[in-house]
Length: 146
Figure 1 (tube, rainbow, N blue to C red):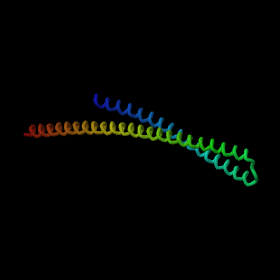
Figure 2: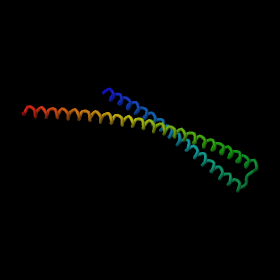
Figure 3: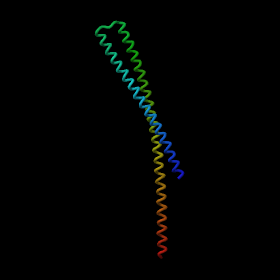
Figure 4: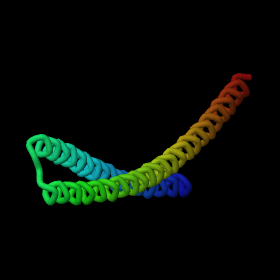
């Protein structure tokens, strides 16, 4: 019985680890979505700004105005590059969190398997003991009849 309670304790601890890892994974996935959304907004803003620049060029734009457009587009491109790097880093963190959760879950399942094996062994032992008692009882009954 001591091993049974030890296995249960290990399963409880592993379950807590799985829950914590799942929370961390959820946070990482949410952060990943937010960074990707920011990147999408930056890309959309850049496209809109570039279209506005093309529109202004067709209607006539001063050299200073064109220069300002180019400088701002370069800053947007730089921000997009930086955001892409942030997205890659956050995706790496999410992948690491996913692997950590999978490891915790695998460990918890392993403890569950050990518990099932221990339970089966106990059941087999009890079945053998019951069978032995039944055999002894039958043998005694046969002896008493003689």
